[in-house]
Image (tube, rainbow, N blue to C red; front, side):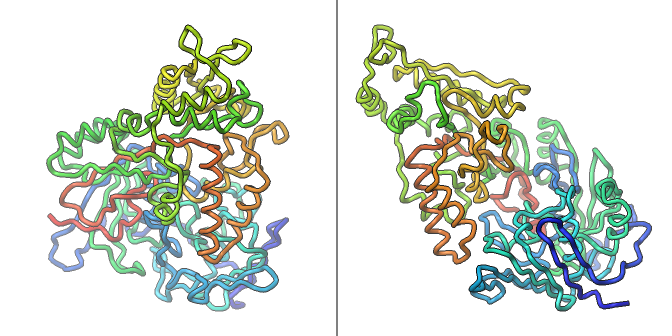
Length: 574
């Protein structure tokens, strides 16, 4: 058999791949980490097993590309080259180091290309004992580059020119241009985990379109994470047991059951009864506050660093009324709302007022937020700004323009209760200022129509990501316009703000690898969006978690509802 230290040549247009080694004999039964009901051995041999139960209101889903709230089980049974922590930092897992300019594993070439090297732990294995090697990563890249296999794709993969495996424990990737996400290849929640070539290559070659239909994505799952799947009952539960061969060491907990409990009240009752120990999606803030008042054996956590915020987007492409396009008017409306009081009322005081699109868990947050305008509540100044624009109050208490037309500014919100409540609250504040305002909630059908969403008349209230990948949503190319049939890939530029100078900053940000230079560009981008008020943040959307006192090591911050992101660090104390 020829060597499997193959070269993966990725033709960018066609995704052509040359693996250069013979297909391994596929396993007929792709599961079998350990049979259901098999005994779990205590690491001490004492027989005193450490068990806990994680409750989730979203049915777990192991398929790549599954919605984030459904990925609770994934960090238990899967592992990437590195893991993204609650503050956006990368920590090596299957790899021995994360590529960086400082450690020499990330090299920028004079011709504009770059090379990243990912050294694998020599002891890394799949749950069935098969060694995990660079050939698995080459196969995973091949699947991700295949047209029609977007669930397996990684951001930035179109920039990969060549990937090679110089030895079984090293992956080397040459990129056609700088790409700042190269260090997180096969890592984090936005990047699919490596695929086991020895199990999936034959099904992939036989019928690519059916790859996601395999039982592998359920009861027969084989991963490389800190726990092995022992039982998978769709729509009910998953049980995992400690993986003694995990490259970072055997977890302290012996067995974890992830229990699907779709009703929030039932989940809360199980937490209070002690039959559920941890949950990363325990309902709304109100649900969490209610649980907090009753639960004596645990702590309710309100994570504002969940990756989303609720904001108001001005229409900056032919707005109605046209005055919305004037920065002074947008400033007046923001000053007329007491955003902290609104956050206290709508999310129980569990959120800061956002000063930019960055979330408080981002490592760049503190340095950049300190330089930004606050737009503190000041209705008197707000009224003066509107008067300076030539408006006067009529006998009805509403501002009128020089022609006697009432100043009327509509708000449109997403269908959800929280955005709708915010829209109503803001409309009341603007009415008190003297700006006639109405709040309208989109129907689910309207919210599904890209043109309806894109062409709101004046202001749009909606949740939005507050993480660093959202930087791209402020680019002109992300604006839903008639020229792109109101459809864009990724998060939309909801305000439809078009600024070539900002576009150049964003392009440079995503291609600037040295961190100090990248942070400088990020600061400039943040200032444009805040100084021009292309988006007006009102509060972060906290995710509610719950942790029993007997469980240690659970982070108070996590990405979205995946509280299990650092599960290998958990322990049970009683």
